[in-house]
View 1 (cartoon, rainbow, N blue to C red):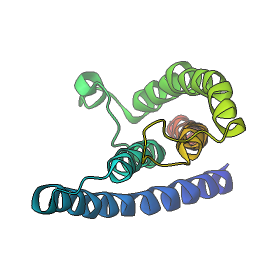
View 2: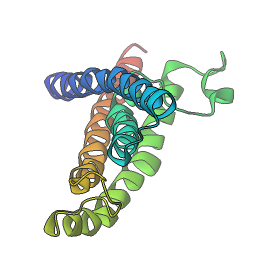
View 3: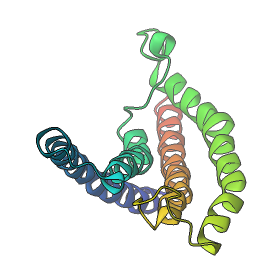
Length: 171
């Protein structure tokens, strides 16, 4: 199980670190766009669309990375309690992964497939004049992002199974 975890987590780490550079690109792009609009009265629909495309990619591609580093949103009232053992935390993680994360991601993958397929079939672009022509690529990132989230969920599930096994063997 450990080699599978290492492979999945190295993919997640690489994608997350690569996506983090999009934050810098987005900040620079926004600064340029604002300067052009307010200093030179020159706006661009394509630049504005690129800003929200980058934001979407940062959010989507960073989700698996966030899960890997356990920085995702969770209700920590019980989970961080000193009354819970590592065994109980592992059980909560396994339950959450199997009954919340996987069904949600699979549902989104299944329901977004026709949406993405249609966008690729028609080479969907922006409906706005002066907008970006390759919107289908952004829509395709939905499948990539939730696929990565499922992969990272598998790695997390395996890690928690190993934790659970180690706590049971220690007794």
